[in-house]
Image 1 (cartoon, rainbow, N blue to C red):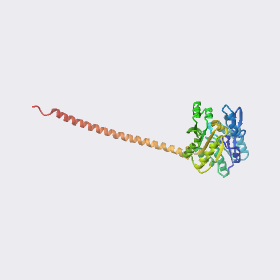
Image 2: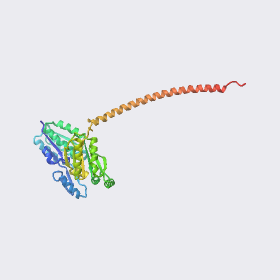
Image 3: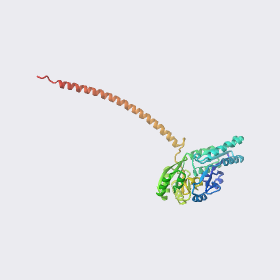
Image 4: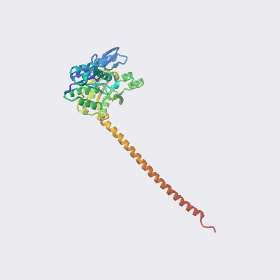
Length: 358
């Protein structure tokens, strides 16, 4: 049986103690606030970060996982006799962590060429954020303990990341304004009118799914989104900053809809807080269909393309047939018209000649 070491990063928002209990290691991202840099999860908790954010006039900044953090963990896994290392990273488009992991893997094999035959290293770009990749990493660790192979686990990751979506709602536009995601005017008007946008993150891209007035409508809007897209039997999770009462209401609603509780309810870590603010509530879930090339959605797109192509050919053939028929009809009509005109002319000619005058 394979001995697999799972490594992820602290932006997955799974507490270090929970990850450690599953044998999962978390490499830290760093956050800088009020002039001091902290290792996320190691040096500062989410609640401590919220307090510092309230004091800071400048937007805190985050940095991806350092190359050394990955390299050290890969060497350690090899020395401890692991046969495989699986590194699952935050969305590669939004962080340098994935690139750092790639360099760490390549350098390790250059330094230890003898390990090529004994250690397999797989890197997974989650294409998402927070618990949307934290949940499957924890599940993968349990799968490995149950005897699942790395290939089976990678297949599980493919399915998960082709389905997973995040929906979050910031209770203020302050942080999305400061991070440059909306203009100052939109932020001012939105806050003045009490507008609360429910924003989705799919394949690392964001867009607003709903807008409600006031906090009381947020969880209702999220429940409606879940009912329209969510795979009820799938794992889901809830993420929250300071509005704990909203998270509790959302948990009740989603538990009622799915018939089972969330896999996790976690505090939003510094990295996601920087973008949405401490006053945030969110959930992640699996869509009912796959988005990937080999998923149902991909098949539908290809089928739609085939149907569209067939329809275009049919339409062209029909147009050609209609055009041909119309041309023949027009020619026949023209001929009939000519004959009619000739007959009329003949009759008129006879009428004009008339009986001879006496």
